[in-house]
Image (cartoon, rainbow, N blue to C red):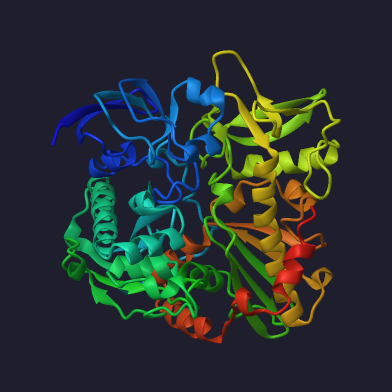
Length: 527
């Protein structure tokens, strides 16, 4: 088969030239050569995230799917979807947003450490669907040797757990590919941290994995397919410790431990956070809500001596999936928006030229639209407002930035509807938890906001649009509680036993089985 040359130009103008078969898609060629393009749906063509710019060369005609996600101007500028565009000649391609550029949260809440009788090094691992964060610690004295992080390389198979489950279901061989890509990245990251600190692989004796149920299954090579359909059963909730060399990890003395999961969709990352925040020891009279906003959205309520948990099938809209100008939190993403002197003022990550809008910026926009009569409470854009216009397809939109020679960033009516569904599902999930606990939202004392995305949002704006309950509860930015728990599990011998006990007493609610969820969801659609 004819081989063609592809010259990929990345965000920092770095170039990578690879070979690809005639007629293959740009995404498939990128995957084969370990170039991680931004993607959410794993190539299903339903998110519109894998945008690339064709600078030179011949490709297939524009598909109907691409016309749903790309404006006529974008198509004229050479913007295409990598998953739908076939290679018909040598190409020069620009891809400014790749998975490797994602800004990853690695900070944790402070906690006290005590002297430990054990020795060696421990690796605390927050295994997220979108990103992986880890740190290496000296077990004896608690010294942190530094953090490192990387985008989860499995993203090429889909940005959320359901996409990755579907990928394994359609092709079982993808399970081993996902597992190996993650293991390879872990080895590179851990050994680099060791090298910087003049420490050796032989010193690692303990690895603790904190991650959701699907990610844990893929890591150990266990099929997650049974979690993809009712009754959503996982092969395991708690995996017994195993030797690291069973993964072909080059840490011969290390044993790998797993923070237990609560259910198929409330995972060990949540258990880790709850244990780190002492949900098993907190005053049972206090009503405390834990919300982890991210690729998946989990909520846990401690009230009247019981702990209730649920997860919403919200999808990764706040990660940019299906949003016209949506991007993840990468350099150039608009992360905050304000309204000053009658115009929008945007701020981007790294103060770079705007490439799109990430989740925290989306929340700001919705709140500003409400407060300035740009949008009605039902989510409809106000056509009489001067900031509302129509695009070339007659769809209402609000333009945030439009400068000559720079990317135009906007939000359409369709985008607002997508975000509306996510917010409504979260609001409805909280309502179900409150009803099950038989308390009113005004009785809540604390709300812990965890997760990478949750730590960058404007709290006031989140309340304006109803993403956070309108109550007097103290809101605490809990940072990366998944990693915090993994760190404590390295240094505190009683942490994992506590986590195991806690995971067994949490009552998990499947919203699909809740009779009044649909009604709550519909009633939550208004902002």
